[in-house]
Image 1: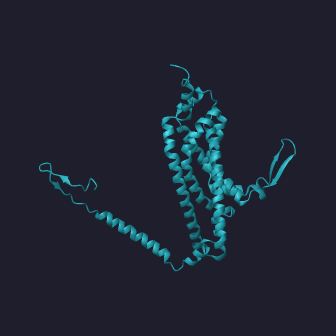
Image 2: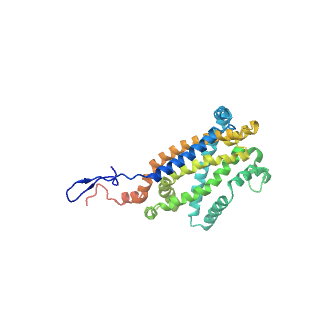
Image 3: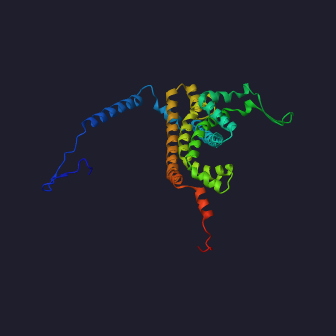
Length: 312
């Protein structure tokens, strides 16, 4: 029984005075109105005579749609991994004492966050107009390896590269926040152990920062699953690209968009479940490690502890 509806005891004779439960009339009216509007919108879509649900069912498990789903998952995973790895590098560069590294990282982040992702995808797909050949050779010589840019920069490659490089700019800020969340005492303890700055970052700071960074990575991956829909402009053979190719042939635009939306929702639901598990696995551990001290503190205490064979 809630405190609001619990009986009140009369202090004079100890008799319980019942309290009437409030009737939330406005709450019920608002709920009914919202349900009515939602039901009306759903009915208008479901019962629309211009919408052929049989077409949705026919293409829901079409081979081209399923192939597009796998390409969407592959692009999302590769772009997320590329963005995370490059984001860690950029975050470390932005926190470095070297001004050249800081300015380079700041310029990269500003450029990729300041230009539209769609423009970046089209740029990478049309890279051959700027560089017809991709060349790796020994400087000041003609010895090297040459690739035709049109053959290398396919729709899939352009999508993975464009999405990954763009995501790295956003991951860099997330990683930087995770690194700065590690207690400053960890740095002092690492220096007390004689560690170099590079080793301190690799052994002490980054392992603890990643425990803070990993849970938000799920949000970026979920966003990436839906952002891959932009890949259709470079014909990356993803879910949206294949769906658009089908509706250009049969003119069933809305039906194929519903098919794509259903599968995007399924992929997002699966990714959300995985993200919740990541948060349960790393969330509390990350907070506890940051608050109570981490690897460097434990190593320093172990180093300073008296050996078991020495008498006090």
